[in-house]
Image 1 (cartoon, rainbow, N blue to C red):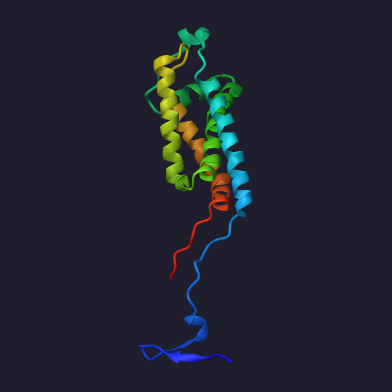
Image 2 (image 1 turned 90 degrees about the vertical axis):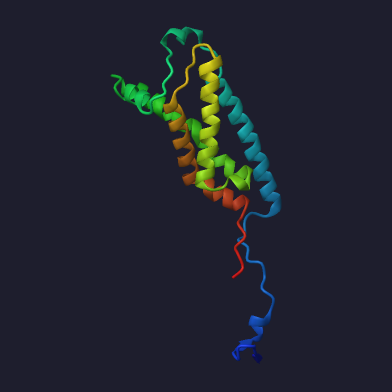
Length: 179
C-alpha cells in the first residue's frame, strides 16, 4: 500500500519520495582492486620515467655537430617528412607520439585531480617542455625541439582518449551531484 501526504505546496508525495536521498555514486572498482591498480600504475610511471630519462637525457657526443634547437613549430616535422626514407620519418614522429602515451594513460589513474583532457594535456606539455629545456641547455648532443613537445603532448592526448579516461573513471569514480 502506498502512503501519501500533503506538502506545503499542496501536492501529494509518495512515501518513496520522502526517504532521504542517497548519495548518487558511480560504481568503480572495489577498493582492494583500486589500490592494486594504483600501485601498478605507480610502478609503471616510475619505469616510464626511468625510460624517458634514458631516452632523452643521455648524452650523445657523436650527434653534437648535427644538433640544432628548433623554436618554430612544424619545422622538424617538415624535415622528418621530407626525408627520402619514410621509415626514418615514421620512427621520429611515431617515437615522439608513443613517448607521450603513458602520461595520458597513467596520470588519470594515479591522481584523480589530473582527470580531464585539458589537465592531462597541460601537465604533459609542461613535463615535456621541461625535458626539452634540460636537453637543450645541459645535455651534449641533444637540442631543444618544440615539435617534440607537440608530438609528446599529442601522444598523451591519444593515450587519454583511448584508455586513460576509462581507466581513470574505473579507479576514481566521480560522485554525481544530488538533484
